[in-house]
Length: 343
Image (cartoon, rainbow, N blue to C red; front, side, top):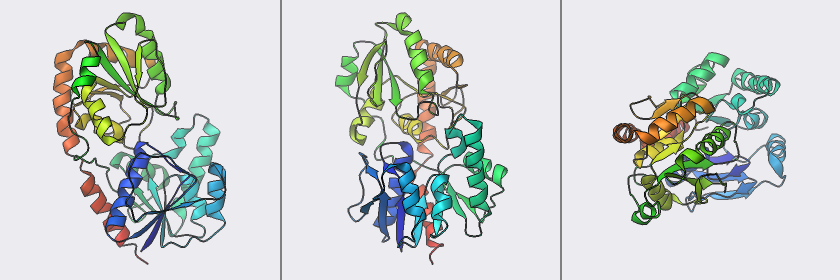
């Protein structure tokens, strides 16, 4: 079967990792897999047999137009934003891989209404098929748009425990010189991932924790008032050592379809401070959990940094949580759904 993953870019985000995991698995099991995209800038490895076809029209809008105006030579075309699912579905056998409720990417209610209209259009189609990455996201899409089990199936994401496990790095720990390392992830969608909250909270605490804490950043290079160390975009081996050597992961996201990166951090033994938008966390048990606003996040971070006993208890429970999410089970279930869609 010929399958295509059609998207604007392939970068280093959790959603990109999930797509690559599924693409690699399909390629390894005999499918002909192609990525159609504009930008390939990812550290995540692809199976050697996977082809990359670059879209000739640049920009995200050009990507949509390119897919909408032609019949693609594939049995199944995977898309993971609803903006692509509707136009590509006019001429192609599309499977929408739902990784988020896309309306929440936007603050503007008019934009949110427009996205909801795309969802309604897609799920009202006779051939609409979607795979959701979490039970919570499935409930949202079914509740809002009436997508029944024939049109919307769930494959809960997992992580690769061969890549993510505790491996503290002695040199990284030595370089902290007794300071606590607050790990953060800096990326483009600042509002949705709450990075504005991260910036506000860490800068407000700079005087109180000067000399006691530092910030470790992966992703875009940024600077805080606290001592800051930028690691760029490390591969999995280096990322594992960074996560295993930090003291807390600050991730005040406003919306998650699942939240893959916090789970990878948990598997490395790093306590996570996040929000109720992450579906697998429970406050005081396997994470520090609060509302996505600067006041509550600051209060929770102060508590987390000063309570070593609670951090250790959360670290142990989080590791158990992470162990229950296995990417191999996810990939096998995903492939089983696709196999049954064979033309």
